[in-house]
Length: 167
Length: 77
Image (tube, rainbow over all chains, first blue to last red; front, side):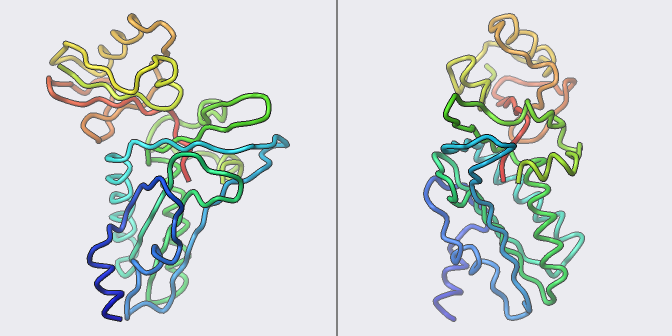
């Protein structure tokens, strides 16, 4: 336990990294003796989207602002569910099919809040965190965003259908 | 001097991730106009912006030394 606590002290809760994400490391950041539940969301690179085959993805971020927005999301979670603790790591650069793009860990005394706060976090990431993905297909490439008619305002909420397509 | 950050397709359209322009005390809307004049391939009217890492509006004033980032529709997660 002492080793774990040391790790928590020295590791940022919110990170943008360009190497594979260690899920266990993110989980450890939200460990708490008061927690009765930890939910982990693991976002992975899907091969087929709307019938089209992805070869790989490239993610780009505005890191300084992305970290600020992760902190903003954590603040919003704290306001709604004061006992929840959250940690988020997003990967950038070249990702292959099934690679992990994002990991969100939420701990709370009871499971329901851990589930709700985790879903809230991924929904908000897709709205306010400046990260972009470029699809690489067999017949070309494209930065995703415009073509999905994403609402280009932070307070705008994407449609449910769009969310499903983008997960 | 105002520092401009470009991402995703904007970065590819201009061929630079960062520009420095000799402007100060202008609005976000005026910077958009300036950029569209110099880079006709850009379309920035509906583009989200951030000043010094905080979301801004077209009416937000930008001072010398500020960093303005153009944020295309995001697709993280």
